[in-house]
Length: 61
Figure 1 (tube, rainbow, N blue to C red):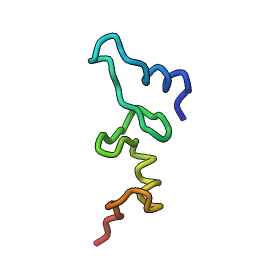
Figure 2 (figure 1 turned 90 degrees about the vertical axis):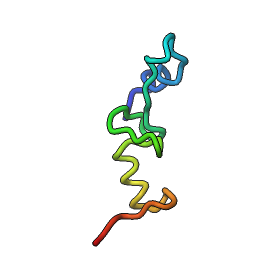
Figure 3 (figure 1 turned 90 degrees about the horizontal axis):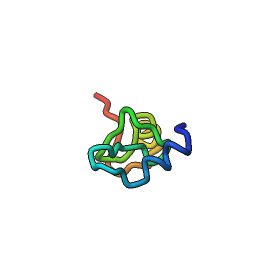
Figure 4 (figure 1 turned 180 degrees about the vertical axis):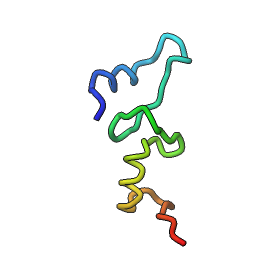
């Protein structure tokens, strides 16, 4: 879980637009972020297994 101070800092408008970075909406993690879903890979996997993301299902062949 990310520190609350870093989450608040990321929510503020940066002085320069290139300083903006993405964080997971659930846990606040910055790495392994998926833009399409707004989640990190860990939260994405958990939510997909629980069926909370519409249209996503585990691949099996």
